Length: 494
Image (tube, rainbow, N blue to C red; front, side, top):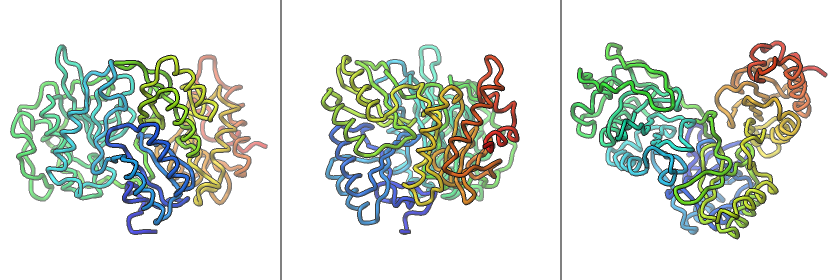
């Protein structure tokens, strides 16, 4: 393993990460999108230098797998030759339709660029851990509620004005609200929070900030901005919370975040954050998937997803070629493991979807594969113990009627495809294919089947759901009512 490939780091183009099937690199275009020709070029590079597998992650990053140390350098040179500028430094992410969505509350791009510049000016990039991130969400059809971040800055309509709510640590449902401020203060407070995180060390995240520090952030916009304040340190004191806290500090955006007022009375908490060690996570289920047809300020965009976030590079090359022939001018990466096709005439949208469907892509949000998270598994990944994608395809084909919950199929206990808990997880280990209920792939399975027979075990679970489900009851609710023991018994049945 090379020096820059430890798990927990971000596998950027210049710093690949070792995985079970070789080195992996991840890239995000600076401009937010790629021309069809650029995507074709990347696919051809993946075929030449990797194992021919390309991915779009839950956060909307592009990954190329199966590289060696030497081929990763060749890939980087070819990306540079293609003229693709890739983003570096602390990720400051906006939605995939930022600036072109007629339903967004505000265009977040200028604020995001200000935050990026302030991070660099403050010298924070080298002091923050590789998983620290910021989301600037302008709302709209594809809001960023499902993407977790250390700092969230979310546009909120307040009468005729737009305000920005700053939240800490989590996705749109779980992040803790700090204050509601204007754009200038939002930038200052976001960077101030990152200063606090940096003072705790490179292993720290915003979840490690104390209630007292959060209260300090809430009061900063009524005193001096953090850009002119000294660095905050648990060992060197911190600014006392202002008594002039914003009267709108607990006004909630449309994400329905639970209200919790910061307290200034608690002492600084000990470090509790821990690097996840996952390939990339930080996304949870969203109400609307990035699949289908979406209105733009001018025209439409077609959202097409990669099944399980992965596709052979040749399939991506073929789709990008057909999209180019149909007039597509830009292809954007989207959270939710999808691609957004822009610029093609309206009458070509359906032919584009038909072409994608014939190549094996997901073109409907009702596709059962959108409910399954599956890593490469065997034979693609040396760490895998079960053929995850084959199992996933079999389950999706025969059990679409009961898949209203997240099913995770993991080749090993690392759980790269879905780091968080899932309703059901099929995980490979030395005993075969284990079934985990309401936990992560690292948990102890409640029952086992041979790896080759995992799909049949899931069909037994599906049969029990169909027979036991009450009228109007979801499969997820039925599983909760049945309990882990009954689910495991069904899975083990011959």
